[in-house]
Length: 476
Length: 70
Image 1 (cartoon, rainbow over the protein chains, first blue to last red):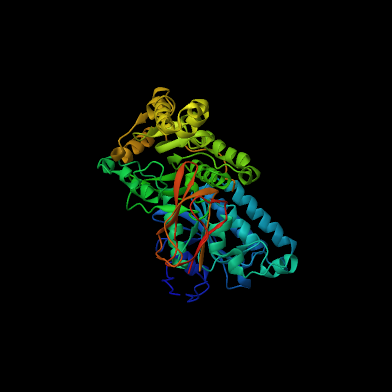
Image 2 (tube, rainbow over the protein chains, first blue to last red):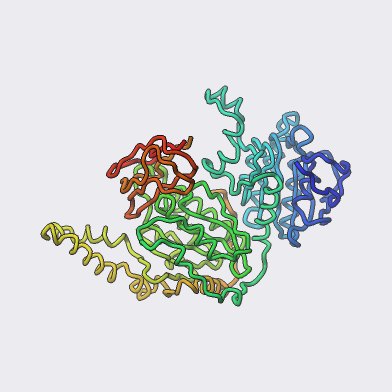
């Protein structure tokens, strides 16, 4: 591993070449020469500093993996508490760099008490200041739950997160698995959803943490002049309205090309995309149904993923852009028993309570309960737009006609049936599902030209009061 | 070897590859129909279709094996 200059962080622990030295890791995170220790070294095993990221003040702390594998004792946990409290006093983000085997066994119950206080401090800071965690090595037990209480978790390839390690798992359940399989980046990116960003290496993980921090510290206004150039976003969708597609090119096309879009939890509950990027220079949170997965249907997990993201953005004052193309909630016994009602309710709650500017664009279709959940007018959207030809309905026209005109269709001669079905569907689309109807009753404010989408969304966000929610960001 | 499995219950609408075909990451293997949507199932690796477990008209459940790419 290459070691980048350590000169910027004053550390009594020598100008170390050890890449696990907290001074080295913190130097990678902060702007050059910006680190100022919170106070002197104390052998607590945790280093905490004030510093800058992209010119904005932050607080950072890092466990010292060189002593006892970075295990957290009572003093180390209290050092994290001090760091979090300092960030709250200053109103700035706090970034934790984790490489820790968990609580210090030698400290006994004292370390458990310290770790519990650390959890409480993180919880009290939740929704008040952004908290970002970077997992650079093992983060077990206490070191797993610390990051899990924060807003965002970035994992380096060497990151391993679990409550109980492979040995205990094997002795209790008989399951044989290594640390990587149990709690490596792939496990948490694809199966558990614990991690938001998986990095290519340690440097990349820290770089991504800087990028994420910048989305929260961005105080720029929307630069509307930069958005006047037309961009044909509809060309990024397939011609057939029934055809599924990957929504990522559309999201990238919507956002600034040089704004550094970061998708969160891209491989978990992938039927909804959530991520942070910039529009006209201002940071925004984006949610988009992704038809590439499960046809873009909402389901239990994707609703929960989206709900947490909405609440995070609301708590930290990041405006939301919601791109809707949703055939409905996914039906099924598994879904109902997985709690699609309980978890879907979280998304309704998250949108309805949020006070940040939030604009919805219906690109193709918005059906049923999923229409309501995707930041509809009824949940308090700042503005709702649609592209020409979009459908807003309880269900698709073909399905609705099958229910409403079952007898007429059955009575029609076989050879005329499909023609009748198409005519009825067209008629139904016009009176019940067409975007004109949605505009007439006020649930869609306006049909906008796809090429002006960037400007129109930014204008609507910029007009709204710059507010933020007053609530924590419980890790839903 | 990569297993391609169904993400949701669906009808198999079109099968676009056969066993023995060479495919690349991003190629469409089959197109499913579910929730009135045509949902392409896409190879996520380069390789050869070693097994193809579905035929047009089949109903498949979430988690069912669609193909194996080697």
